[in-house]
Length: 180
Image (tube, rainbow, N blue to C red; front, side, top):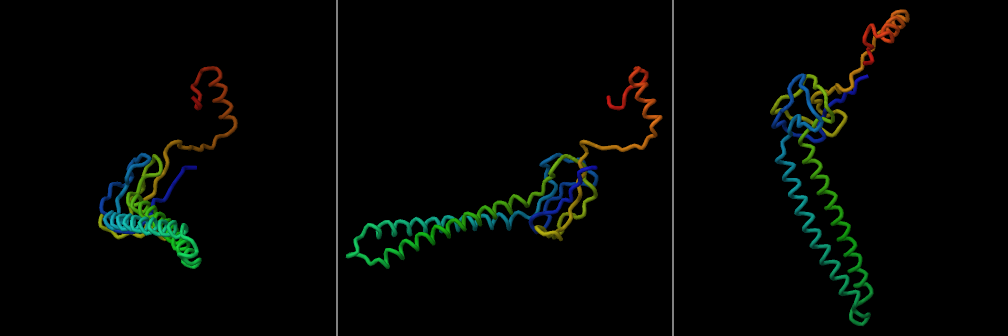
Protein backbone atom coordinates (compact mmCIF):
# COMPACT_ATOMS: atom_id res chain seq x y z
CA UNK A 1 0.00 0.00 0.00
CA UNK A 2 2.25 2.76 -1.26
CA UNK A 3 1.20 6.39 -1.35
CA UNK A 4 1.11 7.48 -4.98
CA UNK A 5 0.13 10.88 -6.29
CA UNK A 6 -0.35 12.07 -9.85
CA UNK A 7 1.35 15.43 -10.33
CA UNK A 8 -0.71 17.80 -12.46
CA UNK A 9 -0.57 21.61 -12.55
CA UNK A 10 -3.23 23.92 -11.15
CA UNK A 11 -2.56 26.54 -13.85
CA UNK A 12 -2.03 26.40 -17.60
CA UNK A 13 0.94 27.67 -19.58
CA UNK A 14 4.22 26.78 -21.22
CA UNK A 15 6.78 24.73 -19.31
CA UNK A 16 9.76 27.08 -18.99
CA UNK A 17 11.95 25.13 -16.57
CA UNK A 18 11.75 21.36 -16.29
CA UNK A 19 13.70 20.22 -13.24
CA UNK A 20 12.36 16.70 -12.77
CA UNK A 21 14.02 13.71 -14.39
CA UNK A 22 12.72 10.19 -14.94
CA UNK A 23 12.86 8.01 -11.81
CA UNK A 24 14.36 10.79 -9.71
CA UNK A 25 14.32 10.91 -5.90
CA UNK A 26 12.66 14.11 -4.70
CA UNK A 27 12.05 15.72 -1.32
CA UNK A 28 8.90 17.44 -0.12
CA UNK A 29 8.79 20.96 -1.56
CA UNK A 30 11.29 20.35 -4.39
CA UNK A 31 10.32 22.32 -7.51
CA UNK A 32 9.61 19.80 -10.25
CA UNK A 33 8.86 22.28 -13.01
CA UNK A 34 8.03 25.91 -13.61
CA UNK A 35 5.19 27.15 -15.79
CA UNK A 36 5.57 30.51 -17.58
CA UNK A 37 5.44 32.95 -14.65
CA UNK A 38 5.36 36.16 -16.70
CA UNK A 39 1.65 36.21 -17.43
CA UNK A 40 0.78 35.34 -13.82
CA UNK A 41 3.16 38.02 -12.51
CA UNK A 42 1.39 40.56 -14.74
CA UNK A 43 -2.01 39.36 -13.53
CA UNK A 44 -0.90 39.84 -9.93
CA UNK A 45 0.38 43.37 -10.70
CA UNK A 46 -2.97 44.22 -12.32
CA UNK A 47 -4.84 42.84 -9.31
CA UNK A 48 -2.68 44.89 -6.94
CA UNK A 49 -3.40 48.04 -8.98
CA UNK A 50 -7.12 47.28 -8.84
CA UNK A 51 -6.92 46.89 -5.06
CA UNK A 52 -5.22 50.28 -4.76
CA UNK A 53 -7.82 51.95 -7.02
CA UNK A 54 -10.77 50.35 -5.21
CA UNK A 55 -9.27 51.30 -1.83
CA UNK A 56 -9.05 54.94 -2.92
CA UNK A 57 -12.64 54.84 -4.20
CA UNK A 58 -13.82 53.23 -0.96
CA UNK A 59 -11.99 55.78 1.21
CA UNK A 60 -13.47 58.65 -0.80
CA UNK A 61 -17.00 57.19 -0.61
CA UNK A 62 -16.69 56.68 3.15
CA UNK A 63 -15.50 60.27 3.62
CA UNK A 64 -18.40 61.55 1.51
CA UNK A 65 -20.81 59.47 3.55
CA UNK A 66 -19.33 60.72 6.85
CA UNK A 67 -19.60 64.37 5.72
CA UNK A 68 -23.16 63.97 4.50
CA UNK A 69 -24.23 62.10 7.63
CA UNK A 70 -23.28 65.19 9.71
CA UNK A 71 -25.36 67.58 7.61
CA UNK A 72 -28.84 68.48 8.75
CA UNK A 73 -31.92 67.70 6.69
CA UNK A 74 -32.09 71.39 5.76
CA UNK A 75 -28.69 71.22 4.02
CA UNK A 76 -29.09 67.78 2.40
CA UNK A 77 -31.98 65.49 1.56
CA UNK A 78 -32.50 62.05 3.07
CA UNK A 79 -32.14 60.65 -0.42
CA UNK A 80 -28.64 62.17 -0.84
CA UNK A 81 -27.63 60.87 2.59
CA UNK A 82 -28.88 57.35 1.70
CA UNK A 83 -27.12 57.49 -1.68
CA UNK A 84 -23.83 58.33 0.06
CA UNK A 85 -24.30 55.46 2.50
CA UNK A 86 -25.05 52.96 -0.29
CA UNK A 87 -22.18 54.26 -2.43
CA UNK A 88 -19.80 53.71 0.50
CA UNK A 89 -21.14 50.18 1.04
CA UNK A 90 -20.80 49.37 -2.67
CA UNK A 91 -17.25 50.73 -2.74
CA UNK A 92 -16.36 48.61 0.30
CA UNK A 93 -17.76 45.50 -1.42
CA UNK A 94 -15.81 46.29 -4.61
CA UNK A 95 -12.65 46.68 -2.53
CA UNK A 96 -13.20 43.29 -0.86
CA UNK A 97 -13.71 41.69 -4.27
CA UNK A 98 -10.45 43.22 -5.50
CA UNK A 99 -8.63 41.87 -2.42
CA UNK A 100 -10.03 38.39 -3.14
CA UNK A 101 -9.00 38.67 -6.81
CA UNK A 102 -5.48 39.64 -5.71
CA UNK A 103 -5.34 36.56 -3.46
CA UNK A 104 -6.37 34.38 -6.40
CA UNK A 105 -3.73 36.00 -8.62
CA UNK A 106 -1.07 35.38 -5.95
CA UNK A 107 -2.18 31.77 -5.61
CA UNK A 108 -2.02 31.26 -9.39
CA UNK A 109 1.50 32.73 -9.45
CA UNK A 110 2.52 30.39 -6.62
CA UNK A 111 1.09 27.46 -8.57
CA UNK A 112 3.41 28.15 -11.51
CA UNK A 113 6.02 26.27 -9.49
CA UNK A 114 4.86 22.67 -9.28
CA UNK A 115 6.34 21.13 -6.13
CA UNK A 116 6.67 17.62 -4.76
CA UNK A 117 4.03 16.99 -2.06
CA UNK A 118 6.23 14.50 -0.22
CA UNK A 119 9.54 12.65 -0.37
CA UNK A 120 9.52 9.90 -2.95
CA UNK A 121 10.49 8.79 -6.41
CA UNK A 122 9.11 10.12 -9.67
CA UNK A 123 7.97 7.98 -12.56
CA UNK A 124 8.69 8.97 -16.15
CA UNK A 125 8.01 12.61 -16.96
CA UNK A 126 5.24 13.18 -19.47
CA UNK A 127 6.23 16.66 -20.67
CA UNK A 128 9.32 18.47 -21.88
CA UNK A 129 10.36 22.08 -21.69
CA UNK A 130 8.32 24.20 -24.07
CA UNK A 131 5.15 22.09 -23.87
CA UNK A 132 1.86 23.93 -23.42
CA UNK A 133 0.09 22.26 -20.51
CA UNK A 134 -3.39 22.58 -19.09
CA UNK A 135 -4.20 22.73 -15.44
CA UNK A 136 -6.85 23.17 -12.82
CA UNK A 137 -9.20 20.48 -14.12
CA UNK A 138 -9.57 16.73 -13.86
CA UNK A 139 -8.36 16.51 -17.46
CA UNK A 140 -5.25 18.62 -16.78
CA UNK A 141 -1.87 17.52 -18.11
CA UNK A 142 -0.31 14.69 -16.11
CA UNK A 143 3.30 15.71 -15.47
CA UNK A 144 4.59 12.68 -13.56
CA UNK A 145 3.71 10.41 -10.67
CA UNK A 146 5.45 10.31 -7.31
CA UNK A 147 5.55 7.21 -5.10
CA UNK A 148 6.24 7.59 -1.41
CA UNK A 149 9.19 5.42 -0.35
CA UNK A 150 8.96 5.74 3.42
CA UNK A 151 7.54 3.51 4.65
CA UNK A 152 7.82 0.71 2.14
CA UNK A 153 5.49 -2.21 2.68
CA UNK A 154 6.43 -5.76 1.75
CA UNK A 155 4.02 -8.65 1.88
CA UNK A 156 5.27 -12.24 1.89
CA UNK A 157 3.23 -15.40 1.94
CA UNK A 158 4.68 -17.96 4.35
CA UNK A 159 3.33 -21.20 5.68
CA UNK A 160 2.57 -21.44 9.40
CA UNK A 161 5.28 -24.06 10.15
CA UNK A 162 7.99 -21.77 8.73
CA UNK A 163 6.72 -18.76 10.67
CA UNK A 164 6.67 -20.72 13.93
CA UNK A 165 10.15 -22.12 13.21
CA UNK A 166 11.67 -18.68 12.63
CA UNK A 167 9.92 -17.22 15.68
CA UNK A 168 11.34 -20.05 17.83
CA UNK A 169 14.86 -19.53 16.41
CA UNK A 170 14.59 -15.78 17.12
CA UNK A 171 13.51 -16.44 20.74
CA UNK A 172 16.45 -18.83 21.18
CA UNK A 173 18.79 -16.15 19.74
CA UNK A 174 19.88 -18.56 17.01
CA UNK A 175 18.59 -16.22 14.30
CA UNK A 176 17.98 -12.46 14.16
CA UNK A 177 14.30 -11.59 14.15
CA UNK A 178 12.94 -10.01 10.96
CA UNK A 179 11.32 -7.35 13.18
CA UNK A 180 14.75 -6.21 14.35
